[in-house]
Length: 201
Image 1: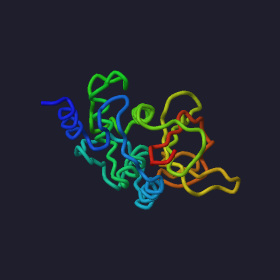
Image 2: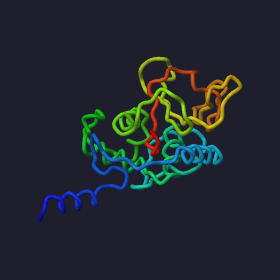
Image 3: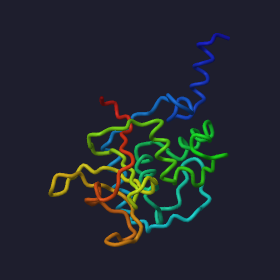
């Protein structure tokens, strides 16, 4: 058995999104317009904010369109483009649990935690400085260094030219507890700004 044949067989057996679960994994491209479209689809379903722990299917598990949190909006946007973050995050955590600060993976909830998505994106997406539609942004709502909110950059801009964000915020202040698209990009401290590979430089 040749090494080339063995390598090809191992790659064929790996998850479709990550050619290998770990650093340097090959990533599937995703059109940023599809991410924006998927995020808007989540808004249109108007799920109420509910972050309860639930046992869900694996892969492609979902808490149901009637509920969700900020991470669910991002997960649903990626699934709209054919990428299952539940599966990808699970495989990555299974390979490197210590990187995520975990002892063992839990496919019911790991991908629904902002801190775990931040770690996954740090490992497999690009950190960027210019704003494009479909980018993923992570905030700390209290202005510190704890990642606790995530959203997707819209292809629309506010009156001042700042890109709008599509996100699902808990019911507080002017936020209703339902997902929306608004001018919130610089409202909180930004802890991460990522771009999923889309075939462009």
